[in-house]
Image (cartoon, rainbow, N blue to C red; front, side, top):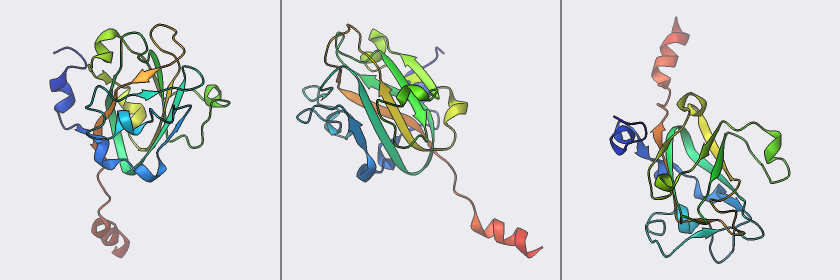
Length: 176
């Protein structure tokens, strides 16, 4: 089985859409008429007529907090062949990043998206780096053709939730 195939994604991995804390989601340098919900929200991201588009230049910085701790396994980012994202950097649990400091931190993982990826083929991340994720920052550094505007049709994150601690189990230990 080749890495990143759909069947590999499905083994215990779910679309993490339901675990996103929407009140804290941010996107820097987005075009206000073509904003992040177009690529991230259910229903919108399935509509190929809707895009997230960059504004002043080709870069986008997306912050996604989760409402519980997750393990991130893989992602899919769809976009057009020319303006679709190329270099995508992922940062686990890094708060308040901006364009001025994004290069000060080593990314947890970096992906170079191919034409196949832009059509929806998932990319498997370095799973060990994403075991205890409370928030995810995605830095889209450039696009396929060096165009002024980057367009993203869909962002999907796949993984699982971290099992919650059994408080009864902890209490028993304290009693001894």
